[in-house]
Image (tube, rainbow, N blue to C red; front, side, top):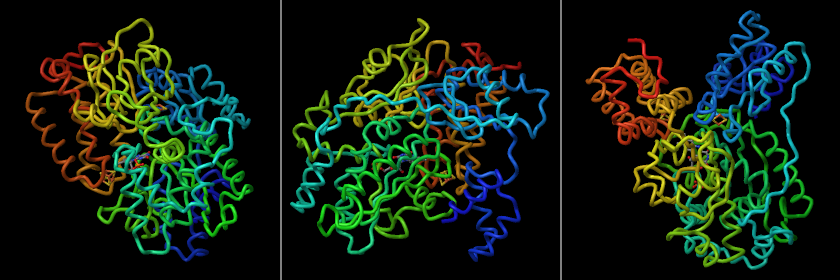
Length: 555
Ligand SMILES: Cc1cc2nc3c(=O)[nH]c(=O)nc-3n(C[C@H](O)[C@H](O)[C@H](O)COP(=O)(O)O)c2cc1C
Ligand code: SF4
Ligand code: FES
């Protein structure tokens, strides 16, 4: 409940005054240091009064490729003579609008495809005390192959399941489908559900991970906008099959529109008797609520997300135990990604053979991918799993914009590293991308044209990890800063041959000793540049020269 209290205080004052936090501590008998440690952890909370216009320019991959640095510099010039309590301009991590870059948040309202003129006008209105609101353009319904219902009656799988109670059959079908988690790790879904089902604890939970904060990752936003019923049905099936009576849908706080859409669909389900007690007149119960994240990429890590729901700092837990045994409130918990859940009703409604036939090149199922960066038609596309990357980037996303050539692409945001254009025929599936030394991850494809400096892109990605490290473990907290310092030095002409060994040792230490995936994968962007763009890297470090003329060499 602590977040509700903190949000209420922030709504009244615009920030969290010390006296209010002391009052909250007394009222709830919670030590003040605990409240402070939570409030200071999350980017959503302000401990000091914010400026009248808080301008935050997204600095991450897709926005970086689309002029975010220049936008921020331009805004700083325009507001150079403003008072600090009127305007503050800072960078912010990915806002989940990578397909409409550059994105900017002004007083927590997000604006996309922003120019300096536009942002200045909005900020001046905020300074004058006028209300500004992010636009929510009407969303035309997009037909998706993934939707088994079309215009016919929805929730058909649940309707049958509460009558048939064929839970073993559900697990058998999921196993036969070989469905794997779509949040990044690719864990077999049937195994996760089976483990929770076998736990004897009478209290269990289902949690949906809709935190989606890795740069380039926008597919869950699309799914929640256009297929909310499939997501709710997937969670409901998980609850009924595993014996969990409560579900929590954890959504990032920048997804206001999706929060509304899901809230409306959940209310509709309660009215129709699909959620709540005695589902459709049977003995099943499943209560579902939305939990809005107080912010931060680390909240997407499953145990950090659980800590956040419990009202703590979102610091990942040591594993084991895994959430299937001791998850939310230490109870067995099914925790899956949005896209994983929506695959379940598809498979159960249409059968395993249908699912297997959707993929190409030996893969199964459909895949939602976000494509952003230097492409002509950035957006979210539904493609067969196994589609060659060439088709996704050059056909679906319209190829590289401005008549330029593709130089590199990240198959899934910073954690997948960068692959060169020569690997464009790699297929979009777990196995092919792993064999290519990358990963399917969350399907966040970011394309870079031939003017891009790959060291600059690696530094951009490593900076993201440094900014988002929760700080719990030393290898990541200190290592990510050291890596940023080293790479920044290279962009400024301060590299030396010994640095390569240092980078190697640092990467190895972070990989082996970090608690969670954030620290373990922070080296991926620069390791991939070392592997595929070695000459370009050596030009920076050994010759103090940026071949693309992007880095601010000062020698
Ligand atoms: C730093 C970090 C951030 C993550 N962010 C997300 C996220 O936003 N969404 C997500 O589904 N999984 C995310 N994951 C993976 C989750 O920890 C977890 O594996 C996943 O939600 C499990 O669901 P799945 O089996 O359906 O993929 C993240 C992992 C790490 C290490
Ligand atoms: S690896 Fe980084 S993000 Fe993960 S627990 Fe350690 S400090 Fe936190
Ligand atoms: S919104 Fe800027 S990188 Fe995602």
